[in-house]
Length: 578
Image (spheres, one colour):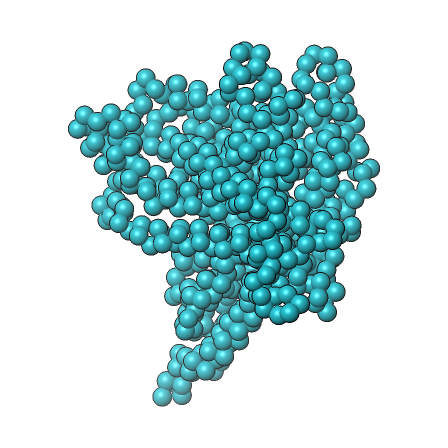
């Protein structure tokens, strides 16, 4: 009867609902099937090929490769160095990042903007540039900081960059921003009333910090430690730049050496890659287990609270001065060292005499170096393309996970998160095994780098897309469907515009880390597909530090400007909050 009384051209409520019940499963299941195939191809196929290559010989399935790999001279020392490096750098990054986050969020320390900048700027600097700049600050022979320490009689504080302690210190400083972001959120989400009660009961600030604050953020702190350990195990830039010349081997540098030797030792590379993969998976499983028990430490309920900073009293300015020194040493000095190196034809210790050699010649030489122009073009194409592909694809996968009614839809999130445990170097090894034998002619092209970048950064795109989509009510999408819109139209015109803050924030992040990427690129590039990080690696290997520094300064300035512009313009669509 309702349909008979409807005006001509008017969509009745009953008919669209009936059509939607017939259409939605077919469209949704087709989209889900396509996404599952793509995820399986990108994530599972590298793992299958890697395991198959490591556990098979000419005679079939065998464990012989494992014995052969670990009978290589120095294998036991490599394992010990790997764990010492990972746990040592995790200790440095956890202590530094947690302290910065605490003083930024929970105290009345002055200069908080400076502390915040000191915590986040290293995220923008590519790892290889950060490590190279510290070579000229902590090298035993030419290190500026070491020269200063010896001049003032503090020889006991000298640390050689080309040593295991130097590697730990440098990598830990570069990983500190990751811990800062994790702990910043944890401290912001903790009710300060408990700390105020402790202080009012007569406890000192150190006692309150030790007995109240840190126990409340224990899950986040444990997660930060484990994630830092995982990142230390898969770190490549620092062990490659500092460890290989000093003959200090870890898993990643051994894998790189096995693939760069002649003949290529694929068996050893695959076994070390599988071992590294198992270690990172174990670490991330521990993180998930800790996160599942995080509700025991919840202090925020329906009762509102206003975070009030702790009064540091007489320690306000000493603490700020201490972190001001941290900002100078960890943030400014490496950047200033890159600038100084870029202005000289060859490295000289900063002095009045050296000022006579200052020029901009290295900046003009950048584009005369073979491969630099194409590397800039390749990096731009890969960064823009991978960021766009990751965020578009993960937006659909996030919708399937959070909004669809498909049985087992959480599996999409699980498989999209697997690359978190896949180190870049291991992914590069696996893709070599696949495409050296694949009929697809993509080995040695930008396509294989494109696949590597998409695979590696899918988990980050998933996190941005999921957090943004979780805030979108299904009522808006249902209204579009009742008005006659199909799944594609409602997703494109309703869901994606509402997800735009998270999509843009994720797009910027994936683009930045794609430009910085080295660990998988160093194994997959060819003479025609160099990217900026690979060019910097080659310039370092050839001793052309001036041109390297000039190119690095250009990269850092471009990335900082990009972040500043997006942050400024993105405030209109909520990118700052995302």
